[in-house]
Length: 175
Image (cartoon, rainbow, N blue to C red; front, side, top):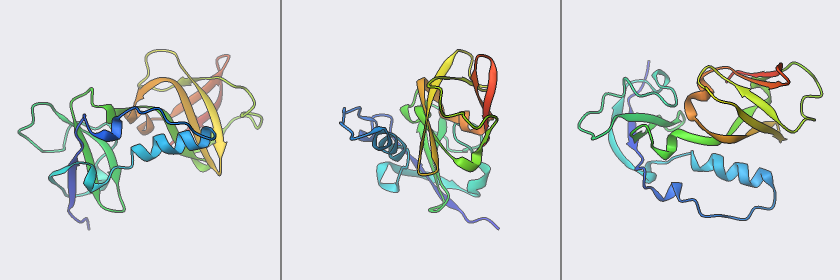
């Protein structure tokens, strides 16, 4: 049985997306800051409707949101299962749709080789990436962060991600 929840629109010009350069003590602080930006709250936007089941939605999804009257289509930019809230943004260029930092738990990564963390640069392969994007991999407190060479669409987390070195798969990430 599912419980109705709120759909909250986050404006593209929200202060969340202001790119004020901060100084960080280390990479982990930088990554946590980037990930925290995507943890939206009710107070970051405004309620535009309700959903019937939070589990029916995925990041980056456009269809099935069922909110009309907007000048651009709405896309899912965030999901808060604890609060039963869906966060959406207008248009396919909304800043909430793109990121260059991804985070995964250790259990979501299948390492092909044990010395996987030693090299500095991996090629990222996914069904939704059409160009060469590279990443550096960092491991902090059982969380793996991928720092990507370019922004990617957030729906990349809905697909398997392969990390390669010299055309050899070194890890597979499935969220």
